Structure formats: C-alpha cells, structure tokens
Image (cartoon, one colour):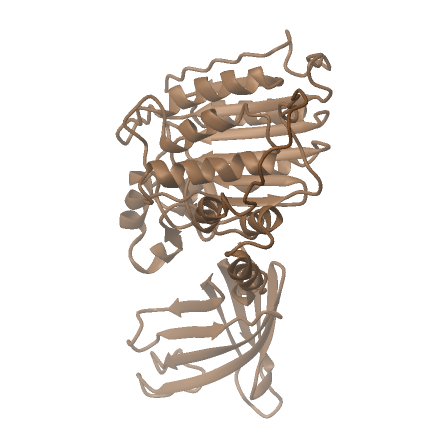
Amino acid sequence: MHRNVLFAFFAAVFFSVFVNPAFADNRVALVIGNGAYARVPHLPNPVHDAEDVAAALKRSGFEIMVATDLDKAGMDEAMIKFARAARTADVAMFYYTGHALQFGGINYLVPVDAQLNDEADLRRMVRVDDVIADMQPAKNLRILVLDSCRDNPLAEQLKRSIGTARSAGIRRGLAKIDSPEGMIIAYATQRGRTADDGDGRNSPYTTAFLKNVETKEEIGTIFRRISADVYQTTHQAQLPELSLSLIGEFYLNGKLQITATPAPPPAPVDPCADASDHWKSAEAINTKAAYDDHLARFPTCSFASLTRTRIAALSIPDSAKDRRRFDGIWLGKLVCEPTPSGLPGWRYELNGRVTEGAFHAEIGRVGKPGSQTFDGTIETDGTADIFQKGLSGDPQRDPFHRPPGTEYNNRYLTKFDGSRGSGTRSDRASCNVNFTKR
C-alpha cells in the first residue's frame, strides 16, 4: 500500500529540547489526516485539514509532526515517535481527521489500508485508549481532537460480515471517553452521531478550529467557541461534544492585553445586554463547563436561575455509566463438580457480551434441543443474577438423561470486578462459573 507521509518539525529532530523563545513551554503535536482509503471511497478533506491544522499549531509554538494517508505501519511509527516526544513535553496535542469507528464501546482510528472482515481485523486499527495513554506523560496539558465521526462504510461492512446478533457492539459515530485530569477531549459531533466532511477545503469542525485556535483566549473558551461555531454553521445539524478536566487556566497564545488612554467615564452599561446571545451558545453546547461560564459572566441576569437548574441536572451521577465499564466480550467457564449424593458433573464454555450493563450469552441454536441462554443485568457494584435457561438435548449426553427438549432453569449469583467475574449456582454450591473479559 502506497502511503504519503510528510513529517515537518520546528527543529532538526522532533525530540529536540529547543523551545521557541516566544513560548515558555515545550509543545509537541501529531496531526494525522487519512483520506485515500483503499477499500472505501476517498475523503476529500482530511489531507487539507491536517496541513492547515499543522500550520496553525506551528504558529502557536508547537513542534509539529504531520502525516497523511497512513497505513497501519505508518500510524504505528508516527504514534511511537509522538509517544517518545510527549515524555518531555509540557503540552501534547493529537489531532486526527479521517475515518474512525467504535466497537464494544472502544474507539478505533482507521488506517487507509484497513479491511474489516470480522472483529479480529480491529487489531489493524489504532485504539484511541492507546493514544490517550501515550499522551499522559506530558506535564501540563494534553489535547485530543477527533474530527473523525464521518459515516463510515467500513463499520457497515463489519456489521454485514459478523451478522445481526454480534453487531450490537457497533454504534454510529464514536463512544464518549471520560477525560483524565489535565486533558481536553474534543469530538466533531456528539457520541453516537456522524459528522459532515464538508464541501470546501476543510471539514466544518476543522474550519471552526482554525478560526479560533490562534486567538488570545483561555483554552477552554477556545474549544467552547469551536463547538458553538460548528453548531451554527451546520444549521444545528452537528453539535460537537467536549470533555474538559482542567484545573486553572491555560493560554496557547497569551492573554489579550488591552491598553486604553484615559477617557471620560462611560455611560452606564447594561451588564445583561449580551446575556441572551451567550445563553444560546451555552445551551447549544450543553455542558456543565459552558453553563458555569455563563453563570460567571451573568450571575444576576434573566437566565441565571435556569443555568443553575441545568448545572444541577448535569451534576447528577450517571449510574448507567458505572454499568458500562463492564461492556465488552466475556469468556465464561461453567463447571459442576459431581456430588457425594450422586449428582453428575459437567462443564461448558461460553462467549458472552455485555452491552450497557446487560449480559447475554448463547449456546447452540436458541429454542432448539441442546440450546442454552444466559441473561442478567450487572448492577453498579458489579453484582449480577445470571439466569440460565435451557432445553435438554441428546439423552445419552445429558447428565440426567432427560428427554430432548426438557426445559430447565438455573440462577447464578455472580460478581464482576475489573476484567474478571465469578459466581455460584443458587441451588448447588458445587456449580460455579468464572468469566474473563477479552
């Protein structure tokens, strides 16, 4: 696979400790634009997006690595160099534009040589979780921008190839990631939605990013304005999602300094004159940070009470989010040991899937003799009652020699913790199940 890779650095080597005198900190950025996909139609804008974003970040004091139309080997190489540079950086930014997808709640970036025949091919992608881990050593600020929520034909190809039952983990757009402390994660649109590639040189999100990133504003304000600009220019069709976890303020290009000559005292200014327009932007972004910003600017104006209500609603813990930490594929081993009273023993292996806290697994053809289903809901503390429903099969292989199609039901009292789970059958202590997350 041919790939066009362009690396541009401020210094002769990307990892140089040289810092532009105009900026007091060491800033590094990796910008990737993938558009020339081999197995799906090309995306026209990612290469332009990457080139223009790299130029803007260079003007803001970043040492730049920019790469376009990377295959898997190229993306791995770029990420290795970026990870090494982030270790000594004060600020690290990763900007990706191109195809991406989510499977089982995990986000993947798609190289241009990608093919998706089944879940195993996901190893040909770059996990966003790995990108975040690579950025963690940066001392002061980490920024992840994913302009990559386009309608992805590769995801549809994977759905068709693995079948309806197994494609439940493939969702539109990307899954939301909770940002670690000291990090900004920006998506081109809301989780589970797709974004427009744009008709001009750049995508709508990159257009807004280029408009705002070089302004002399606090970094949180910059990204909130980017979100508001995209929402307005797309006629409310695309609302970027933003996750900020910052303490204090950070300026990429310094604070705006205004020097004024003495003048006569101005006429009284209405402190609420701009409250209505600012409220519309805050409501469009709909994050706690946006509402906090509005309340700080207009604490006594007409929307203050409604703003406090919205902040309170967004501050309520999302218990469903605790359940989703168990989402994914689980391998189970069910073992019943023989008992002194004469009950026989047996063992099964099963593949289960957890989706938004709901566990489901199947053995055999559901509804036919010899089939089994396992279902249950994992609570926020990891406890779950897993209900086994089955129909006996061949009497010669059935431990109890029951007629084919005899219905039976069991309950397993189970506890999930991290990537493991275990349980015991409620009516037979010698029957146990153990789970391992894949």
